[in-house]
Image (cartoon, rainbow, N blue to C red):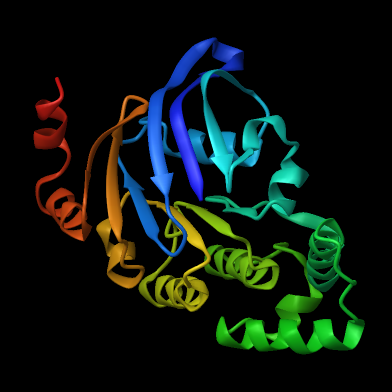
Length: 251
C-alpha cells in the first residue's frame, strides 16, 4: 500500500536535512505507529507525504498503491486515497462544516468517476457518522473548527476521515491536547474504520493513545531515520524507559 524508500527531505527555508533515509512499508489492513523524540522528523514525514510546501525531496520515493505520491499535487494525493489528520487543525471562518464536508466528499467521488452524493443521502450519512463521534448538530452548522475546543477539532478531523473513507490514513499526533474521554472517542472513530483494505500511520509521542488504537507495528524514529521496529511491546518499553537506551544502541 504505502511504500517509502530511502526518503531524504530538506527544509527549504533553512536548507537543513530533516529526513535522512526513511524506509517504511504500511500494508493494507495494518496500523503502524511512529514514535520518537521531538525533532526526529515524524511530522515532517506526514507533511511531505500529504504534499505540504516548504520541503524538498532530495532522494528516494514514496508510493501509494504503486502511484508516485511525490509527483502529485496535494488534491491529487487526497483523490488517490491519502488523508492527513493534523496535529493542529486550522479554522476556516465563513465556510460551514456541512458545506465543507459535502464539497470534499463530492470532489473525491468526481475524481473516482462516481456520481455526486445527493443532499438527502449526504445528510443521512453525516448525521450517522457524527452521532458515533458525539458531534452535535450545532457543531455541524458552525464554520469549520471555528470556536471548537481542542477535542472538538480532533473529532471533526475524524468525522472528515469517516466521510471520505480514504485508503491510507495518517494521524499526526491526534492525541495532542486531548483529555481521556476525548481520546477514547477519537480512537473509537479510528477503530471503526479499520478494515482489510485500509492502512493507518499513527504518529504519537505517547503510548497511551496506543492503548486505544492498538498497532500491528511500532517504529522508533530519531534524527530523520527509523532506528528500530517492533510490536506493540516496543511502545510499552518506551513508556517505561524512555528513548535513551534505544538511542544509545544506534550511536
